[in-house]
Length: 98
Length: 130
Image (cartoon, rainbow over all chains, first blue to last red; front, side, top):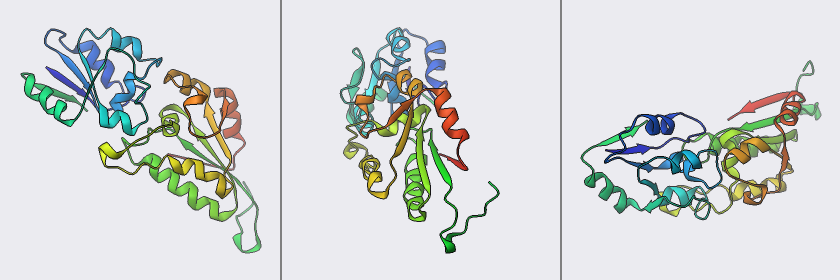
């Protein structure tokens, strides 16, 4: 399952819920909109993302808009809108954690 | 707080603080707050801006919004000086929790502790939160 998070992890608990609940086998996390802030290097959320046990993707246009181009942690995968579509198509199902 | 504002006679100058606590593009709060700050500049009041929690993300350097087709309003923070709005306060813990340092910010700010921020807030006549 592809888990999509669009809220800042410092503002809501949606990312924390994903990391607590999601089945890791076959799972993946896609950070979009304010969700991308979770992947900022040296942030309080970096360690929990590193320990996600699932691939983590970041929507590049949303990261760029927020000035995060060179401020993201290692180990996350950048995707564009085409990559977003591929991720959705490549998983059996999708959950948006609003 | 007992003095009424009296713009016609020049009136009393009050201390206004705008508290920014939201990230810039996920909601409209940051942009709308900035609009209000610019309007406030017309009233010759003692205006300051505070950046707390996700509000510190508003000041991150290098915002590039072409890909999301939204207006990049971050250069406006640098123009505030031209409106005599020069008091920009950032709470240190909010910044550090988010992996940011003062070097990541696009304007000169005064970084302060939570307690100092609380003191600043307590000194205001009016606090408006976005």
